[in-house]
Image (cartoon, rainbow, N blue to C red; front, side, top):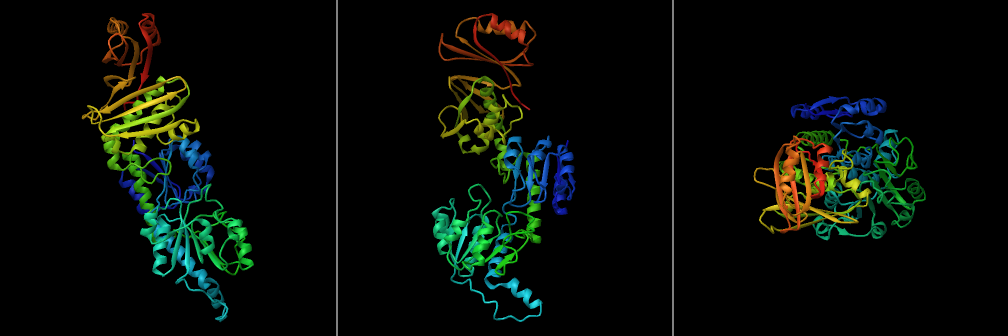
Length: 531
């Protein structure tokens, strides 16, 4: 059955057609996003949800979205999506961070020019039949210092445009390296210096716990007198009430805002001030940008639903279509390793350590790690997946670490997973053979070569005669067919293990007969998803 996608906000017909052309069953209802009750009623039918800013994906919507696998936001901001709830639900949240970067950067520059020259007020005055030429005295941008808060996709474009206007540019961004700053032609500074030295300040950061209120009342007190503030990023970055006071008393010469703490903004402390330019969140509102982000989100969602490729996800590592094809067997192996460890562990896990050896160490380790953690967690919660597993692990206080190393043994590559509890460490390793099939190659430090099946039986015992006979006679004599039988031991007379691949689930009475032989230290039936 084809994946089904709901488009609940306005997307271009070209974008909707992309879904159809890719074989997706798409339901285009652009007005549905504003109808919360109707959205709750129907969302359970869909594998994907494509939105803009009108649709609010709350925890209630996610709870009702029983089949949802991916949410695609045509644009950058995802303030309207409860990402933590989506992650716990195992739903990927994607955005399109590059489709409207130029448009938003250009709007920031336009707003900067508008407030520098008081263009909106001058236009309104002239339309009213006044000729107040002496009233609207502006300032040049040339040679002024521009402080850029956030030098990512949009911020870097603003920096480039500002250089074209011969502005001096300084930037604050904790993730901006000195090398990148040099390439952009900016001087990296701390916020205190940016506040004190900038003639214009523009914001290009997302709204997070760390950035909320970044231009606070205290920060406004540090600003250079006569500064002009531009915000085309996110509402909530600036204390609007404190800024309004500074505008009224002249400490701040002007402001240009496209975004507000509350949207739609029908009221704001910044409204109706003569030195403030405001627009209704138009940063991405160009024909080109709207088309770009719509096409991009349609392609991204289709790629994920059809091939497993993940692009621009906010709560899961990205995996290209090419990576998905190559990594598929390794992802499955990581899940199997995790599933083995998870089913064998019945006490709280303190740490998960993953070793990547050889060629696999060059792959997308974030994705492989998510798969391994998901395999572990599924034993306790079958609804956990690669998206939600890291969240669950973090909530439980589990430390996850990884190590990489070059080829160190007979295999070109392998993954070794170790689970640490208060009482013990349990490790298992596996590889992928040339036929693309995952196999277990080591358990408890004992080398084996085991095919992985849907139903398996793992036993441990002291190395002694009679084990093969006990397993074969007890299982075979009770109608259990063994598809594959693997044995291993640490050394003669010491620890030994057996791993059997059987056709069906082994009933408890038959397992009890194995226990009754008195030969086994541990008998564990295991299940693996080999689909």
